[in-house]
Every structure is written in C-alpha cells, then in structure tokens.
Length: 350
Image 1 (cartoon, rainbow, N blue to C red):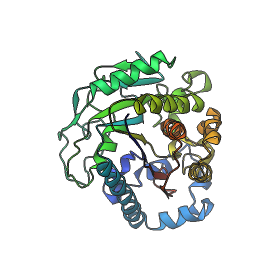
Image 2: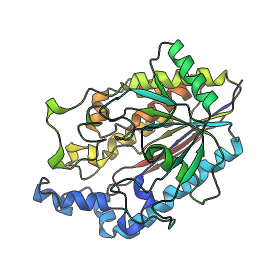
Image 3: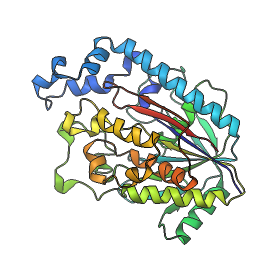
Image 4: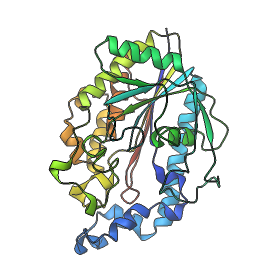
C-alpha cells in the first residue's frame, strides 16, 4: 500500500523575476486605453492595494519572502516524506493544449524530460538566480506510475487522455517546471520523479485567449469563446479516484496541486486590476475547515467570474484529501492585490 502526502503550492511566474519587475502585469494594465481613467486612480482601489502600490519594490520583497518561506516549508515536508513519485496537477496555457487537441485531462507518462523555462517567448530576460536563457533542467519521470494511474482512471470511467511525450517545445509547461524550480529555490537539486497531470483549467479561454493572458483589447466576444473546462465536481472526483488508485500502489506518492488562486487578468469585474481576494478567502476558510463538499459544489461559473480558473488544480487535491479523510495541518494564505494573485500553501501529511 502506498503512502500519500498532499501539498498545495503556486507556480506564480513573477517569482522568477527580480523584485523591481514583479508588478509589471499591473503596470501594463494601467497603461491600457481600455481601462477607464477613473479606475486608474489609486484612490478608487481597495486600501491594501494602495498600500502595496505606494512602494511596489518593497511590497515585492515582502511577497517574495513569504512565498519562498512557503516553498521551503513544503520542500521540508517533501524531503521528510521522501516520495517515489511526485504527481503535479497543473494547468496548460497554450503549451500542449493547442488548436489540434484540447483534452480535459492528460497524464504524461515520461521517463524524463529536459526543460528550458527561460526560453518561452515573452519571458523576462532576467531571473533571480542569474541563469541564462538556454539553461536546461532535467526532470526525471515515472512511466510506470503515470501509465498505471491513467489505465485505472479509464477503467473507472474517467476518460483521461495520456501522452508519452510533450508537444511543448521547451519541455515541461510552466505550471510544472515552475513548481519544480520553486521547490528547489535554493538549488539543492530535485531528485524526485515527476508525473505531470495537465488539466484544461482555462476552458473557454485556452485558445481564444492563448491560455488566458490577454489584454482588454484582446478579449474575445462570447461567440468566439471555446468550450468549457471540466466542472469543479469532475476535477474533485478525478482527485478522489487518483487517491484511491495510488493508495493501492506500491509507491509513496506526493500529490501536488500547483496554482495561484484568483488572477487579476482573468477578473473583468475588477477591470483586470486586482484579483477576487474575498472570493479566495472564502474558499480558503472552507479548505481549512475541511468542508470539501462546499468545494465540490462550487459552480464553474463562480470560478470563472472570480478569475479562479486555475483552482481546478486544487479541486483535484481537495478531492484526493477528501478521499483520504485528511484536513490540512499547515496552511498559509499569502494575500496581494498588485501581484496578480493571492497564493496559498498547504500540506496534508499522512
């Protein structure tokens, strides 16, 4: 019987950048002609947002401090558990899921893969580690665990896709490689084999907005939006089934959900200026209380309205922990208004 560790983290791209660049997304939004001029006035913003914006570099340093502390704590839990395999639930933003195929779920059965996280077009030229644009990282895979999981999910009537290689030209998509890079923030090495489990979190915006990161001017009309992502309850149930299957396996498995919570650039009700912090707080309190049914019953429309599309990754983790009867014994909410999204760290130890 395999033991299971649950972990929730973020793969926030801004953590790669120097502090002075971390608020670049908000800065770019404020320059958009599509944002009403009156809403660009900080006096119209929530008070915590005004405080952060008063000194964005200092706020970035504090945000980084809290994020790095969260990753170090999760890495300690991971090392103490010493898994045979690390499964990561992550979203795909026009990396593997493109015009020629958009599954709801895809398990990647790899022996290993080389990734160049700084080679993606549009990525900043600088990173906090001073690593060059051609820097490559090798990540071990676990073909047997991935193939076993996919086969048993299909037998249990979960129509997941599977693949033996990445379509993405730079190796692991950012949700996965960023998770590995941040769990190895101190560059000690990451020895654990990884099974990437991709979810079409962006649904109606995966192709129409190339994975969600569009400006106001690029927002598609309703008829140009794509079909939806899988429902929260379906992701929750996939997580439950994954936990049942892996608990019967011979492997020690770490299940990791990787995403920030609501995203400013996905929250039109806030004019793409700041995330739905209140909505995130409500979900966080239900997570801490172990109210998993409230998570499962969350409508997809509610996640979309709050810019919480990537929370479908955490829905899988919540389902898995519900199946195992676990509640988080270590959770932290890292709030921000100017750095695109609040983040949560959580662990669910055996």
